[in-house]
Image (cartoon, rainbow, N blue to C red; front, side):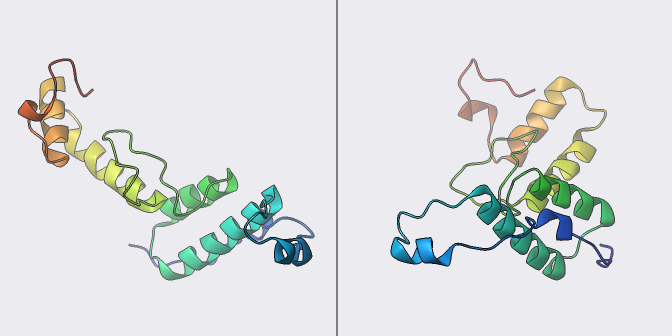
Length: 136
């Protein structure tokens, strides 16, 4: 993995943002986080993540775009190839790397071989699927 290079995520922080501590302190359980609150938290999380996780420049670009579109670093985009249980926590970078690995592995395979590979990747066999299920 390439070493992290300097990056500027300051545009992701809401302009003139100030958290409303007074309202929050009155009713922390009932406080509704605003869009600027969420954007600020996502930008902070991204900044911390970029500082500690090694990644390529392309992965960093994709991750910044993901957060800029309103998502959290720890939010999963969902895999293009396999079903990921919601109970498990897969972050953006993990899913991206997994999909890249799968895409390289299945490149040039026929549909039947792709299905077999994806089933094996998920730890399943043909016997685990009902007759009507097909992976494409």
